[in-house]
Image 1 (tube, rainbow, N blue to C red):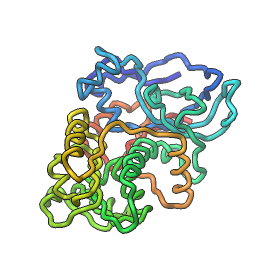
Image 2 (cartoon, rainbow, N blue to C red):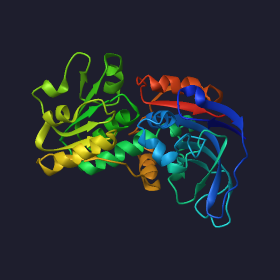
Image 3 (spheres, rainbow, N blue to C red):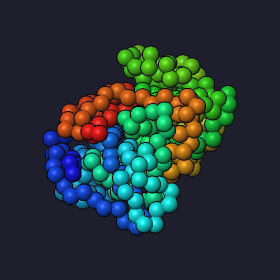
Image 4 (spheres, helix red, strand yellow):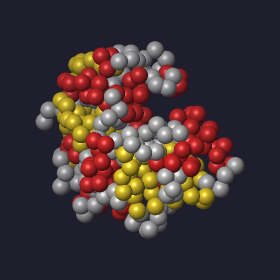
Amino acid sequence: MKAIVCTQYGAPEVLQLSEVSQPSPKEDEVLIKNYATAVSSGDSRLRKADPFLIRLIFGFLRPRQPILGFVVAGVVEAVGKNVTQFKKGDNVYGTTNMSFGAYAEYKCLPEKGVLALKPQNISYEEAASIPFGGNTALYFLKQANIQAGQKVLIYGASGAIGTAAIQLAKYWGAEVTGVCSTSNLELVKSLGADKVIDYTKEDFSQKKEVYDVVFETVGKSSLSSCKKALKKKGTLLLAASGLTGMLQALWASIFSSQKVIAGVMSETAEDLVFFNQLIEQGKIQPVIDKTYPLEQIIAAHRYVDKGRKKGNVIITIAH
């Protein structure tokens, strides 16, 4: 099968199109013929080994799993003998978690992994745009226990996590303020943001308004700036904090009435089922910036590396 192999850490050119062996499902696994995947900021950081800690976890000189990619969307090709939830021909989507391997024509996943049937009213490409940003936004926003009428500020509102977070916060009845660049203001408004702040012209932390929840999705605003915009008993969510941010969050939570949440998110198949309901009801709109074929994975990574994508960058695999 065709797959993109990461030969070492570095620039996008370390990704190479190769022929590799097709996997076979174990007794509790399904084999998915993959039609679409995504290039996220997480994929970019892993490819670059940024931060350096990535090398200690995933392989020092090169990734131990050379086929990267977190997201799959396709058709069940075969099932292991103990599988009961899925059958051949099912349209599915989900995430590979730490097994990666989604930059390929086929991928095996556990039946009880982060995998669900694809909503009928969206394409494979749209389905592939949901899990990374959607599951991350859902995990963090659930920690804040958002109530109707609360004020929520989302920094990095036009990214994969931000575009999902706007729609989720609005679904729960919050008043949403999105922070983004000038070129993305209309997109953020179209997703339901009540107010927008152009960070190239205004500093949200210097405005008088304070929020029940501040959600920093991209790791580009300082902890002190976010806390300035937070109510005394508000909640700060840090989705891209890194180890230093996690330690700062722990310290800030101990010595402040403000709650600061950072760390590694977790996800379940139930999260995808929840999104299925919202998608089928028209409450969530997939956001895709650019689409590339698998053969142009290097160009896709170059684009993501710029840090200016709107929503998601999708990779299509011939079907």
